[in-house]
Length: 286
Image 1 (tube, rainbow, N blue to C red):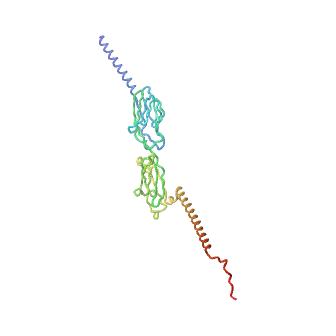
Image 2: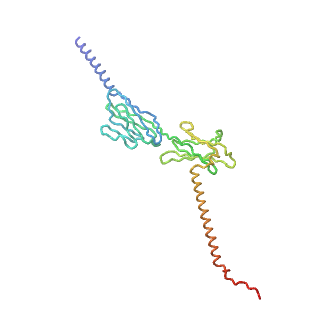
Image 3: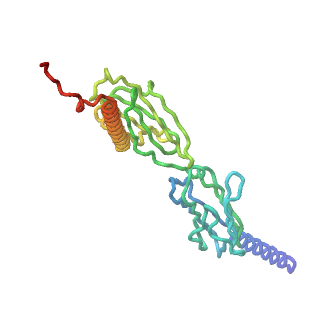
């Protein structure tokens, strides 16, 4: 009877120990780490990557790392008191439950997949962050050339240019579009639509639209008639004024040179012609 009681006590103690162990272990190991994703970044603006941590019990961050394409871009160790700004990336709002990484003056190459890794006194965790970069396209600049209308805009990501005549006829298939990357990674798009000025109605309205392929919509557009495009823009006006000034200068210089040449010929002729003032007076015969 005593042995049976001892066995029951032993089994009870074992079960209690197991329950306590599992409870303590689960408290220590329960940790959820999340970062907002996707995150949108805009050209030359600071982009925030907010992250949060949930655990049971007190937690203290020891290490925060941000990696991309297999490379470590940022490392902060609370024990070593690292700089909170490292290159383009900085650490903000660090407390026991959350923090934010800031990418300063975001550029196109900052877009992509990031992996944030943390270590705390409760364990470690990681989270993926997708940064979608966007640079809104500028309002299209339309200009009239000798045999075409040009439309120019700049932004990111790559987009298409659509042409419409009077809001009804699609002329995109006869246009020619060129793209080039700027030094900052943006896309400069120039599209030219051929026209015949002698046959085209000057009041026809042409529309140049920037088509956002990713979002399936027109992001920005501009419209103008040929008669409006004939009016020169400020830069062209300056060039035209410069040409007029140069033309006036050439005319004045030409007139001065012509005057000098005529004066020289007149003086030369006078110098070598006989002097009529010393001729003898005519005497009638006696």
